[in-house]
Image 1 (cartoon, rainbow, N blue to C red):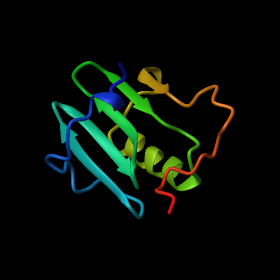
Image 2: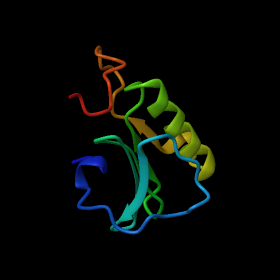
Image 3: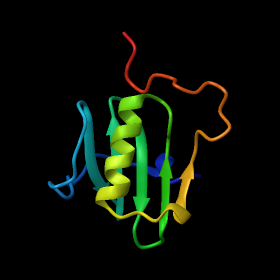
Length: 98
């Protein structure tokens, strides 16, 4: 099971200084920092276990949010796993379709 799949809720907004894009929320649950963009969790960072998962290339805006978080939290590239790597359906809209 991936970090992104372990999310339980939306508790405790963390680090008010982190830059966000429209319709993004940053929160912490069970020691993991998450970011949800629209209805999709695009970022999960477990600082204690030095593990970070992202869902890149769902949209350009989601990519920008991921970049803001990686830079703002100083996440090392060596611990980042892109869960969308190898997905042929790149640029799948991360928002809610109506």
